[in-house]
Length: 148
Image (cartoon, rainbow, N blue to C red; front, side, top):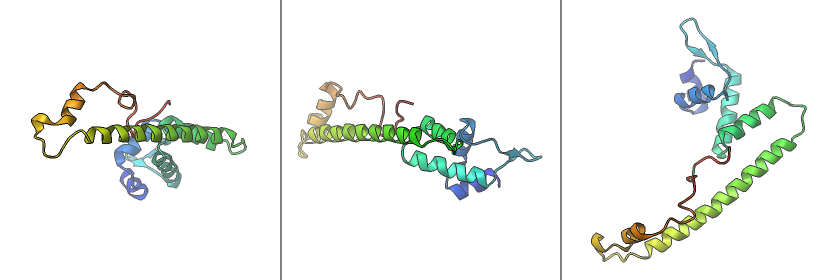
């Protein structure tokens, strides 16, 4: 199947498939005589695996490691369990950071009275005068990658 067909079957953008291929997550496909990429069912299965991992917010490095481990079927699952445990801890930390961010935003929102004009808006004043907080100093946005 051509890349457009693969994209449709996997519900994934063509550009994403090309990127993951470039990153080495998808093996290079066969090239037709007219240089079209030709994919097979194993590409589709791997693409769906990658999409599932990414939907769980796993980094490309984590996905790559899981794919590598999946190629060693006789090995123990310990390393996979460790990787997932680390990812869970990352998610827990992000949830805490997001809860803190929500509190800060609600506090900021309560500073402004709806009857005020923009010139006297306490939200804008607070943003202009405020010090960056721990959650705003983070190097990772909500859908950012972590440590890998």
